Image (cartoon, rainbow, N blue to C red; front, side, top):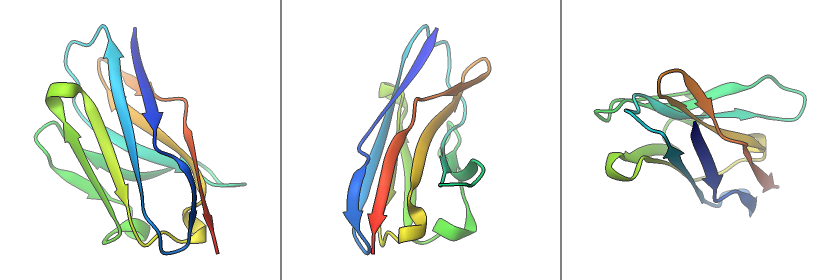
Length: 114
């Protein structure tokens, strides 16, 4: 079993910053891509950012220039640095990793007040 545990969510004012972290643990063989998805109120889950094992990144248009994804392969950890946050960024943020299949974290709430 592989577990993903997120941390770093919370309440922040518009324009502020937060950093999310996600650590993978358990019977890890090799983690390929890692990323973050989010699900806002009444919305479907959507991709926020993804990073390959070698550091290649891809972002949703809505977060480009404001969010940065990076990872520490030695610690099986992925981060999401979020800046210039907007109320529309309010969502539950889920960590995702591909390790012999898709793995998901339990989610962490990010609330941005106007």
